[in-house]
Structures are given as structure tokens and as C-alpha cells.
Amino acid sequence: MKLIIFFSVTTFIGIFIILFSISRIEYIPILSGTPKQNSPFVKAVNRGSFYETISKDKIALVKFYAPWCGFCKRLDPIFAEAAEQLKDEEISFVEVDATREFILSRKYQINSYPKIKVFKNGEFYEDYNGARTVRSITAYAKRLLIQKFPEINSLEKLQSFINDFDKVVIFFLNEKTENNPNLDFEKITEKFPEIQFALVKNEKIAEKYNVSQFPTMIFFRNEDLEQFNFHDLKTEAFLEFLENHQKLQFQQIETRLGFYFQEDKSFFILFLNEETKKNSLPILKELSKSSPNISFFWIDNKTLPIESIRFGVYSFPCAVFISSKNELNHKKFFRLDLENEPISVTKLNEFISDCLGGKLLFAQKSEPIPSTQGTVLTVVFKNWKEIIENPEKITVLYVYSQFSKEDLKFLSKFENFAEEFKHFQNIQFAKIEGFANTLGILDQNLDYPNILIFNEEDKTIYKKFEEKWDQEKAIKFLQEFFVLNPPLKTTNPKEL
Image 1 (tube, one colour):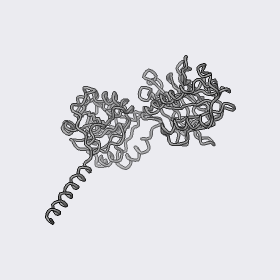
Image 2 (cartoon, one colour; image 1 turned 90 degrees about the vertical axis):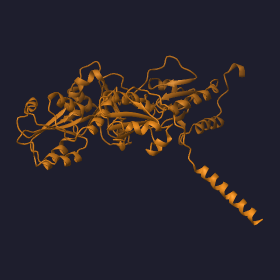
Image 3 (spheres, one colour; image 1 turned 120 degrees about the vertical axis):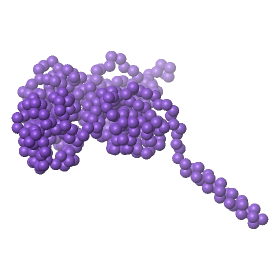
Image 4 (spheres, one colour; image 1 turned 135 degrees about the vertical axis):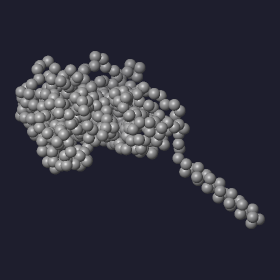
């Protein structure tokens, strides 16, 4: 009897341990098979081919993405073009669907999309945190491949080297100065990892750059078209020189512009396209020297079309001035369209002076007024008063972003909800895309998505969704409002 009880207990314990162990095993999805190749220059891999692929070349840039991610889709053509440009280098461009390759995602701590991980000789090196542009990605990858101080022996290679990077330092040496004990090259590269250095020991090449004294260093600051010569090539003096000259007078913005809401200073931004860049950048360079208290930037519309929409820029060149914060802790922006008139330093200085002097009204942005309307009225800044300030209607307004999948998903629910009320006399439902339109209310820093309900009498915001956004709670918010504020009698003939 005791033996039977003993075996029963041990069997029970064994089963319990097995079940407990199974419950602790994490779900690991089956590999996705052969991934779809989206570009001939970017290798799509799964876990089975990952390690072999990243070990093939000296450098591997691996993009972890999610198929539904909008930012990932915008990065795709940029990543593919960078891969095509570097197809002859020892650099692999790789992509991994992080939503299907759970083990790889967990190993490399992928918690947002897209992520670019960098590998050297098959080993993880670092995350890529630079701008998501072709130039920035290719320059970064090339910098990993080349020596810290390569020697360049031809004029063509030197010109190509200078053009490839935003900040370049060339040391021109001759036979007498090539072994310079005063220069600690290792210390210099550690101090300024963002600058690319090279050596030239060919006096004929030096002549092309008007170098007659040796040693000479030329610092090419390509981002704002500046060039500086320096002759005292002692490590500390040289480091001090670079420290004083590395700051840009103006710079290109290559990632989304959010900081201007936070920093209490004024910004000037010149929006350009491919046709206007060449003639406009030298003017911006001169302009930036005249106003040291203003930060100057330029944006390539091809790289950042989203910022053009943010400021209502639809023609090029276009100047935007963003003020420092006022007493209400708000910023204002002013816009000057320059498509049909010559751009000059004088004209831009006058624009800045008028902005600072309060002579201009702050800029509004608006999409075109739609030619037809549905059950949910489309509001833009230009028809705000006509719709929102209708004295006979309570207006229920949905403010959303065209770039948010969740916002657009809720829009269909909002439209279905509006259908139930379309025959009531004093109710109208409306929507406005908050990114492309100035809101016709004081609260320009309104977070969206949001729902605003306007009083029909004085058109103030009677009710606003105050909680953290949740689609179900938003619908409940609308339902509760109409329970407490029943609309007037329906005008639907079937219900009269």
C-alpha cells in the first residue's frame, strides 16, 4: 500500500514538473521560410541565413523592420539606394522582419521600428543613430571601412573623398614634414570621430588647393560650404582650432523637426528642392553670418516632405521664421514664399526684421477647401469659420493626423457614429487633419487625436476628450455626451 502511494505521489510530482516546464517555455515562432527580396541590393534574411550573411563582408548594416510600420516604409527606398551606391564595397545591406524573427529581435533588443544595427566582421558593433538619408548612411558605412588616416595619391580620389563626407580634414605634408612628432593622430581621431581625416604627400596635388607651405591642414566643412586653413600642426593647438571651427553657421535638418517647440530661441529655416539648392545655399551662408543669435537651417523637401506639410510649404524656395517663446510659452511661425521672386540676403534680412519687430501676422497653413462634403464635413483652416462657427449647430470635431494608422482607423468609426445622427437638426460632425492645418482656436499645442465639441451659441469648446487616447473610451465619451445633451428632433421624413 505504501509502495502504491509512493509511486502515485512521485508520478504526480513528475507530471507537475513536466507541465510546469512546458508552461515556462516561451513561444518561439516558426521561421518564415525564404523571405521576400524587396531590393536586389538588400538581402532579406531569416534566422537560418542571418549569421552567414552578416559575416560575408567586413561591414553589415542590418535593418530590423515591421511590415505595417510607416517609418519603415519611408526608410525602404533610402536603404535600398544606399545599398546600390555601395554595391562594390565590402558592405552588406541586410533586412529582417522583426515581427516574424522573434529570436533575433530579442537578442538584439529591438523594441521600436525601424532599427539599424551595425556589424563588423560578423560581430555586433553599434547601433546606427545618424540621419536616415542616403548620404548619411553611405558616409557612415564608408567611414567604418577606411583607415583612420588614409593616404591619398590622386587628385580625383581626393576630390571624391572630400565630397563623400560632411566634415573632412586633409593634412598636406612634404618629405620634410611627413614624420611629424608633434601630431598625435590617435588622439585627434578619438576627439573628433565625426570628422574624416586623410593625408596628402603629393606637392602637385597640394598646388591645386593653393598649398605652398608645409605642413598645412585644410578643414572642409561641406555642410555650410566653409573652408579653413591651419599651419600650426601641434596636437593641442590643432585640437583647439577644430573645437573653435567645427560649429556650423547653418546646417541641414535631416530628421523630424520637433526641438523648436522646446528650445527658447528663434530659428530660420529655408525650405529647398533640387532645383533651388545650388543658388540658395550660398545666400543662406551669408545670411547666417549677420544674425548670430538666430539658428539657421535648411531642409531638402525630398528628404523631409513631412516638415513642408507641417509649415504649409508647397513652393520653393520658402523661408520660415520661428519665434522664441512668448509670455504664454507659445511659439509662432512666419512664412515667406519666394518661388516667383529673386532670393537675396537683403530680402531675407528684411523678413527676419519684420518678424522680430511684430510687423507680420503669424502664418496660417491650410489644405485646399474640398469641392464636395460628406456626412462628416472636412474642415481646413480656410473654411474653419464657415463650418465650426455655424450658430445653429453643435459641432463635434475629430482632430487627427494623416500619418497615424490608428487615427485613420478611428476615423471610420467616427464616420459610422456620425451616420446615426445625420438627420438631427442641431448636430454636425466634422474632421480636420491637424498636421496640415492651423486650428482656428487658441490652443495650437493641442494633442491629437482628439475630439472637440463646440457650443452652438458662442462657439467655445464646450467639451474635450481629456483622457489618454483610447478608441473605445472616445466612443463612450460621445455616447455619454448625447445622453446628457439629447439633440433636437430629427428631420428624417421617415421618423416624423
